[in-house]
Image 1 (cartoon, rainbow, N blue to C red):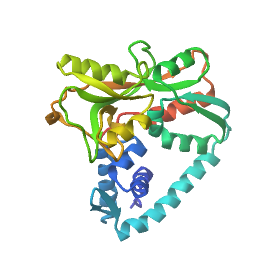
Image 2 (spheres, rainbow, N blue to C red):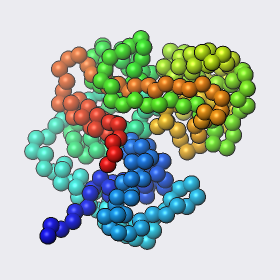
Image 3 (cartoon, rainbow, N blue to C red):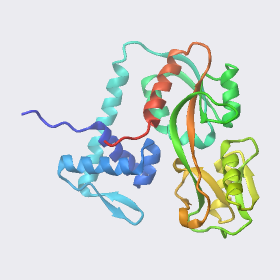
Image 4 (tube, rainbow, N blue to C red):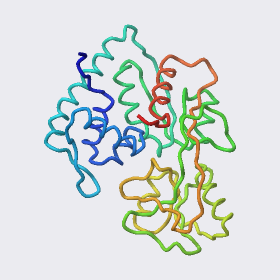
Amino acid sequence: MRAPTLDLGLLRTLVAVADTGSVTAAARRLAYTQSTVSMQLARLEQALALSLHEREGRGLRLTAEGERLLGHARRLLALNDEVLADMRTRRVGGELNLGIPEDYASLLTSVFSWFHQLYPDVHLQVTCGTSADLVERVRADELDLALVTRQRRSPGGEVIRREPLAWAVGLERQPLLADPLPLALYSPGADLFREVAEAALASAGRTWRVAYTSQSMAGLSPVVQAGLAIVVVTRSMLGPRLRALDESSGLPGLPSVELALHRAARRPTEPARKLAELIREALAPATAD
């Protein structure tokens, strides 16, 4: 009889949950849906016939069996990564310039780590900026790749993922949802989110006022957390101190946006091809496992 084999992907999910303390945060780190993380934990528990975690308030903690498995999981994953890096017969090196909006950078945390382990001789430089500006820099051959929100005025690129948009408020505080709505918006021309928010409210006959503006979510988040404004975000941008409003809020529905990978017109370098493959794999829509 063939000996059973542990799925390293399931172990990687366990480690992410242990490191972040919640399914939600683990899903953001791994670029999975929350349901995928929960299903993978359940599969791991079923394979071992053990209870590995239990709820603790809004988060979770590992059981004694889960903690014991965690140590093994870290060693197995480290060995797996070491083997893959060591067995690459041809070293990939050179310069690689990637552009990405600051708000999406967290989606690629695991990609950056994995890329560095696989291709330590590649000097990766990451530039943050607005989606429109980054696309222009790719077209000018200043960047090899850019992962951006697909813009109406700068279409193209390879659609990697579709992200639903949501109205968000602070976890503990929120403003009154009466007109004129106080909005925290990206600076004019910074991204598509501002255009989408204003168009949705105008179509619904709602009035609003611009309470705060910033080039990134890092600048908008504090005032939203304080309950002074509402913001439009993708689901993956919802941090632990923000919550999405549902249909009962009375706010109009929002569409999804497309995350697109743009590549320089010149022949892609090998590092660019390798990074594009990892990004595509990490951000591909989750399917039932």
